[in-house]
Amino acid sequence: MIGNGDVVSVTLFESAAGGLFFPLEGGLRTGNFLTLPPQIVDEKGAITVPYAGPIRASGRTAQQIQDAIVDALKGRALEPQAVVTVLERRNALISVIGEVGGATRFAASVSGERVLDAIARAGGIKNPGQDTWVLLERHNKIAVAPFEAIVHEMENNIFVQPQDTIYVYKEPQTFLAFGAAGKQGQYPFDAWRLSLAEALAKAGGLLDERAEPGWVFLYRAERQQLVQELCPDCAVNEGPYVPVIYEIDLRDPSSMFLATHFPMRNKDVIYISNARTVESTKFLTYVRLLNSAIQDPLYTATLAYSLKNLVNGTATTGIVIGTPAVTPAPAP
Image (tube, rainbow, N blue to C red):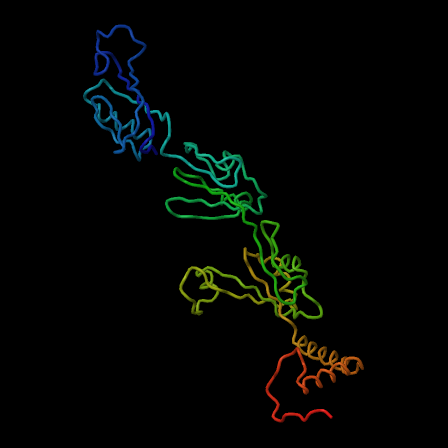
């Protein structure tokens, strides 16, 4: 479609001399055609053709403009024909900015170009594909996808349209691991796709002496529509996203296979719960430490000395918990 600001050229033809544009006494000529000076589609979306008046151009294709010119000249010119050529597109522009070889703005091609074609025009991406995201803004709506999702799934490589803006940016996908994991912290995907099993392996797996394989939880904000499909009877809060907790029992072999196909999402949180026996083990460990300390003569002497200073009021450190009810007599 041609839009306001585009530059077009119009060539008019007649079947023979003696018509509207080519009189009989015109002399030698190369043909019965006339090329008008280039015109800019004005703010009203129109161009001007002699004897046809203003012709609406904005929102039409070149073929539709040709048909409109011919209809306006019928009955005045001899079998008129028209050819409209787009010399410069100033309205149908596509912008590509961000982490690309060189930000650019170019005219939309009539043959059609896809998102990857537009990024290639801008010099390609600067960063690794698994850390790159592509944002497409069109008609005040925004869609975002990983770059490799556009490369590997061709249905995502859609055609760009005039006035589209493509923003390429770097944002490594990460997840968090807490609890009885081998290594707690934040981990990058280092890949476009990452399964739950791979994420658990990146976090060091489950600690044998602490973890409960049946209590592995994944925390994620899911879209409202998906939550309603998973649980039609669940009452969820208003808003586009709903907090959801997935529970995985790795003692079940089928869950292991499921974990290899369950995709991780950016900012997911994995929590591996402690086994029931861990708290008892902690308590027994404290008891053993206390028993060992009491049996140590040096520790016993130090404890007695500290208590004596506390009773005599000469202790310089520590926390006072209450006031003695009876003041001790002075030492002889």
